[in-house]
Image (cartoon, rainbow, N blue to C red; front, side):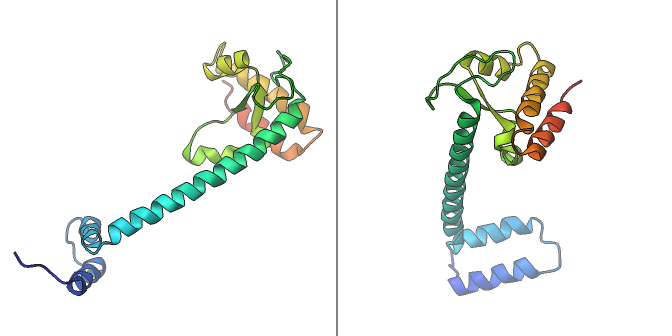
Length: 167
């Protein structure tokens, strides 16, 4: 079996990437040649570095938001129907992202869309007990309470988004 030089492989890759006729799965062919040229491993390493940097940035952003939410809560559960004393310690209570999720939904992470809950309220909210409408209404009340004293537009937008969850 004959082996091709890296230069020949690079020329074939360039041809396949730019050819105007249908060769089937063009991306698969280009990826296989990239792997043979060693570009696949390099790309994977670069992707891993980018992913780790993005995760570190997200962790830092979450830490800043947590600090602001803890300061806003003044040691209490922010569920308007509870108000349990949690204390100023950062390890007590749970920071709940009302619009929790991953991927594109991470963009909703902000001080206005997070609240500090006691363990009981966090468990109930996570499991939708007594229901989604109940928690949406509570979060809207929370936004109205804190929106007037702080960044009103962000809290108003969060309340509107929560209102869209109501039946």
